[in-house]
Amino acid sequence: MNRRTGDPTPTDIVQHMMSSAASIRKQMPRFILRILPVEVASCASEEEISNAIKPLVARHFPTEARTPKKFAVLYEAHATTGIDGMAIINSVVMTVPEPHKVDHDNPDKTIIIQVVKTICLVGVVEKYKEHLKYNLRQLTSPEP
Image: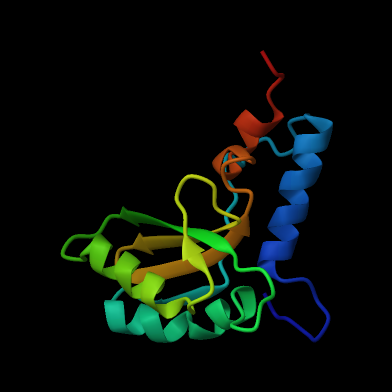
């Protein structure tokens, strides 16, 4: 996306889509199952990912925050071998500044790391579990 000042971020767009889908409970897109925002793309190495997500972490987890955020890190790898997922997760956790804490049970925000072959895609989302892992089909299905 080409962004200008004041334009919504990919995260803002996807958050709005998920919130509206959850509120109307109507299947909107026919061929989209899951939508995840990508704010940073880099090579799939621990050092490259750590350097690439620093501005993203600074935006979503400021050090001068009045209330610390609880966060979780979700790592998924597709069509790749030789990349240590725990090393990448630990690298991302070490990048987030001190007042914020890891909480996998009830996070405020989730950092999603998707590795596809040699590319790493990173995004930060809110209400990941409440929005059923951003799965549109589950989110818009009628409640049992």
